Length: 214
Image (cartoon, rainbow, N blue to C red; front, side, top):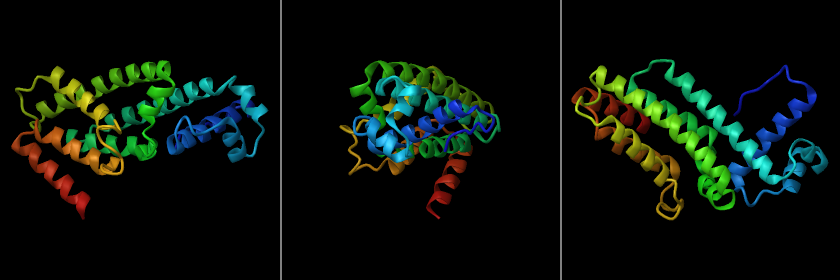
């Protein structure tokens, strides 16, 4: 799931293993539910070992979110470097993010906001800055290649896209039992892209959607 570092020293390697496992558990069960005891038992190590690397749970959560955020940013950057068709690129990024967020089964964004607001604020700002650049670049390429309309207000589109992606993760607006995150994200991407494509882009979008149903 995450990047591996085979040449790290043993203490650093243990820290990375704790980060991987803790991040996985937080995303699966929620930030509030997972305790340091749970993590120690799951890993077969003592709590003392965890506290050697992280002084408390808040620091562990902070490091986990930094760890996750950096891995996602790195992965998205690598996808963008492939210079795919801009519509295909959006779907590839969506797939990558969903895998790394474990389909957001525990609504981690809103749990983070509720229980760790300072960490949430920092991560949200970082996500906004990176997504703004990514979406802006994607739209510019789509316009230049004839897939997106050339009369778009790109600054508005990039911000409304971020706002939408954030809002659909709100479990009060979109309860998971009624709106599973994967089809919800697919519906949102189609909604977003249909609003900005040319006939050429619509053809690519329809091909992607039809292939997903096969």
